[in-house]
Length: 365
Image 1 (cartoon, rainbow, N blue to C red):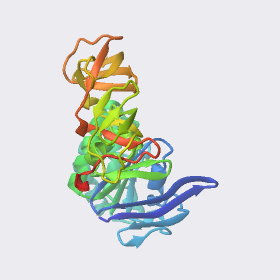
Image 2: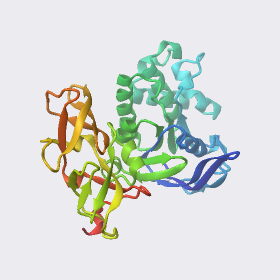
Image 3: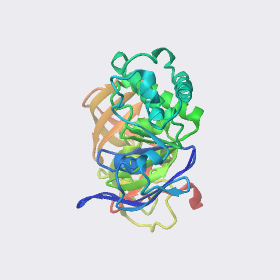
């Protein structure tokens, strides 16, 4: 096992800047997820770590070794691809052991490692089958088995679950997490699915337009997003972001003159009116009478019952928003309801630069 450190890494494809000075340290044995929308640079960063692309500037270290010029086969990493990349004419056992054969391992060593990996992944009964005889989930296990037999310092996963159906994705992400807990090998996992990131990661790296927006544990990013992008990207349904104004760090005023009490603000923020983007998680909105002075009035546009929860999409003077209710309510489209919340659950961002204005735990407020 080994740590991975990316230092001021830049990657350009001609005039196009894909990565713009990325810095991240992944501790030995950690499960790190790179997450972000398509085109943010996460897969490019993974390919740079693997050695499949050359960096434009900066350094990549695996353990204490700078690997900028080290060929992929000598980096002691193993990669699991989105499309499995199995050889159709080889059996499961042959696919899993092929890298060991190329490395000149003995037949006995190959058989031992393949058997051990097959037991870990529940592939014992499938070793003589061919890829065409396997389900999507079984093929993905074979791809992971091929990586496990190499006993690498670092596992790299490039959106490995995107070709699976929804039910199988849930099952496989649990299996990958369990596998990491057993092997304790450093893992770097790329996905655009923030649910995968939240459920699997020890450390999440949120990327956007070639830069890192925030790094932290899943619940840290969920509870304390650094800016509106992270706030809206992490969480499903996404955080509501509403246009408002904060007055003297005490009251939040919406366009319709509805007022909510403000959460504690950072001491460095000067009092006075300031345009903000107010973030509130859908599950943190509560019903109240629309006639109350502190109620934000919303007209129901769409109702989505999911079974356990009901998602209610509304239009208000502050903008469109979504609320999630666990209780059953007899809502009707076109109805106007009132919404209130606990000020401590609000997220306040400067409208001009996206900077978080809330007081943090260590601010002493």
